[in-house]
Image (tube, rainbow, N blue to C red; front, side, top):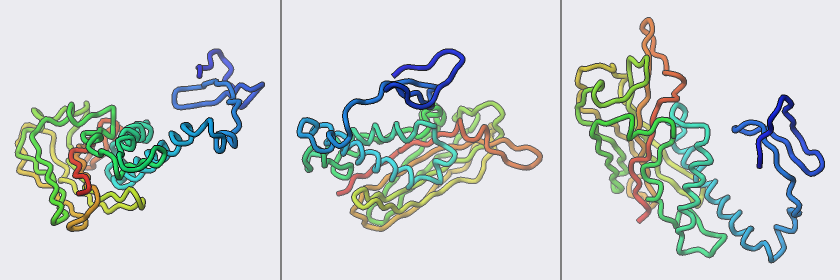
Amino acid sequence: MAKQRGILRLKGTLDGITFYKSKDGYMVRTKGSIDRSRIASDPAFQRTRENNAEFGNAGKAGKLIRTAFRTALHSAADKRLASRLTKEMLRVVRTDTVNPRGQRMASAGDLLLIKQFDFNINAKLGTTFFAPYVPVVDRATGSLSVSIAPFTPLDMVVAPPGTTHFQLLSGGAEIDFDNGLHVSAMSNSEILPYSSADTELLELNGSVTAASALPLMLVFGIAFFQEVNGQMYALKNGVHNALNLVEIIPAP
């Protein structure tokens, strides 16, 4: 594909050439010549059908994860999150050694491949929050928590200009990829001052089904605020907020 240049910006199809607008601007591409019905039935396109099926499985798995952590992602996700997570879930799908090609699933793949995934590529947790924290997942009780030892915000947090306060957040989820279901629990700290005063020990706790036989996931992140006349405002609509998939416990 190529970008459109010049004053005119076209949309539509003309003589087999399609003009369209994407996140990257106005683009142009040639119209495919292979009929969709042929791809769906011709033996020559068996590999294509298998690849498409597994890409679809990866997309569904990624969407389920995004849905499970929707509350946290509302303020900590970049515009390309869906496509980035689908790409990573496709890697997971392709590690499935149980099902045949074209039917491989995320539930049978290596979910640890997406551990430490950043939901906001513009604000990675590892370059934003430097205080020690301990993620803990207890399958027997269903507890998913993050413990943060006392720290000095000005020393351990890289905040965007204008920050006066911040908040730490976590979320645990039990993910049923095969049935498209999830159980989630979110937790967050109080909104804390971005200052030189040490915080207290912070515990962010959530719980899902005890003794679950499904994969368990835990995210941890930080959100920034600015106080104006006693009111807290999210800073720049969350563009600097970080959220990371800090722990994954695959199904037993």
